[in-house]
Image (cartoon, rainbow, N blue to C red; front, side, top):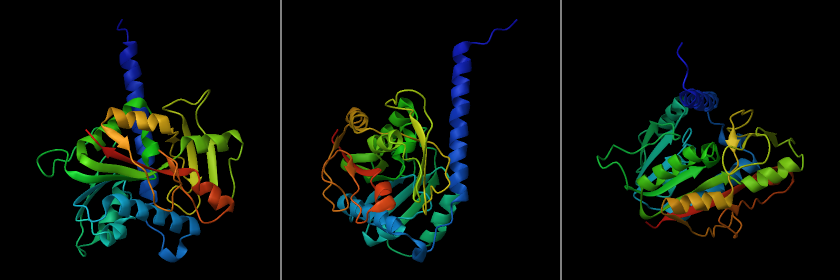
Length: 289
């Protein structure tokens, strides 16, 4: 009788779980590929867009090459053009979102754009220029880094991709759900209001990696989402950064609190929308080695 290798079985199970989560994310963002009209945007959406614009201005204004991770349907392409970025490559797991981004990008404007499907839980390098790395002046990841903290391996893979792509002196920046803020809200039992719905998806004590939850934010691409996100803690983020030759740099843009390394958003409104915005924080990490 053939006996199954327990280690092989565990690896196969982990691979199947990984593929199922990637498929769930792809399916959700495929379904959400059509962007809302500007007139339909809420105060929260307008502020989050402004916060992204401020980060792009601080770290990518007039840069030569920007790599945007989890670019979705290209919601920032007008910002890229306005900030005179010469070339942007956007990566995302959802092909339908990428089709929407390509359609919105068109052929006009001085910013050249290229969109590529990639599951960033796996290693990625840019083969378009023949060198495979260290060709980007900046790397951005807006409202998506928390998806990659499923495990230490997936987080390390993402940071290795960033380090490989980024020039020395370049900055990896973006906005991420702040693990401490999410955890505090879950512990207080504030799971649902008119703006956000949270659900804890881990058991026991929260860990550095793999502490999953869902967060559905009304009026955004995550509305009705059951895609699992993961707690991201500042000390874990900076440790990973240091291991990949990245060091925190301050964010002084007015949309963010000054205290870092995770700089809380500072919304100009209160109530449920204000509480929802304060679940998120900006980060900026410069490649120093």
